[in-house]
Image (cartoon, rainbow, N blue to C red):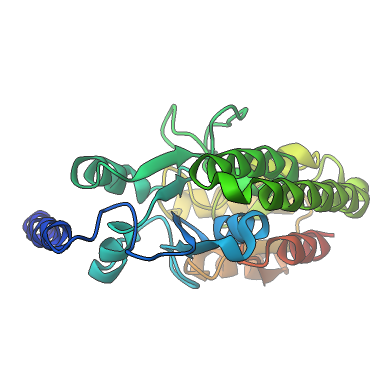
Length: 287
């Protein structure tokens, strides 16, 4: 039933796309458009593109606040806007795996840029063998590399804005370096410590700041009774007092562990839009 609904949705969408083309609206641009139209997967990417593109770029993230990129599906309205977009920056989050092949088939004029290109990627903790960790944006120095790719792409599509894009990139790169230095200072006293999190989103963050991530979720599944007992025992040995959760996931299992160890549950949101402020907030909560 779900597969049939998805098939019908994309069949209807292709009909809409054909209508746009007949009416003279090319798939890659709006008639009379003054801004470069860009789509991204998540809100931190939206922040990155806006920092570099400024007012010359109109950028929209598919996954909105409170939604999870694990299970997200674009709305018909978003797909319609994607059909009139020049660039889509992907970052490797799970919902892209089903979306990207459909975009390639139905929107040949849409340029898809992978922001993971050239990065030293990790396997996702507790996942099936070979599954890559998409949470690259939680390392500011990786974001600096992603920002350069964003700048180069915007210049390719809008050469007239090259000076602005380069200037904005240089300022953003400096801000990312300052952020990295600040996080090193905040987290240095915790070097080597184990951080207990509900969802394994912090692999790159922990690699950058010499922490160890321990996730409640394993292989995409919440822990059963036996594993929950092992996690509680391990948390006691590690003298953990805080379990970090995300607003996109249920905190029930994390609360069970926290209660058993006499600890607390603290919320972090790796998908918040205000990237630099949010990274400082997360580091402060961990410290």
